[in-house]
Length: 169
Image (cartoon, rainbow, N blue to C red):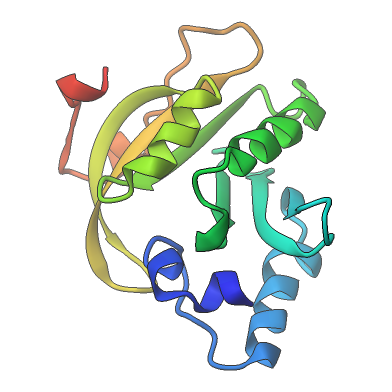
């Protein structure tokens, strides 16, 4: 619940902060338990086995990879370690590639993607729902099956405002 109700963490997550613990638990059930579209892991520290974050890979056509973590756990390498563990357990035949996006105002998320070996593809402007705000997202791609020529152009084609940032290449 602390992940979902921290305004700084929630700023970059695709939902509104839940108002109650019941709402937070329902959100977790809706996203990861009742509708298991892919694979997800809770991130827990060995010291107390309490969740400090999550990482998720969607089974959708985009194979979207996402994560979130308590602010107190930022900067310790936990997310990179957990994300790599999930990637390692995904079958290449089911997940030949992964995509991930981050808000340009959240470069630390992009740094995790880079540490995982993901390659920057392009930046696009989306009117982000459900928050209904304009966000410039950077899209990263990890080819896992050896097809280094693959591109994921869905958002490039879907959103008319897009660019390739030279500083990200």
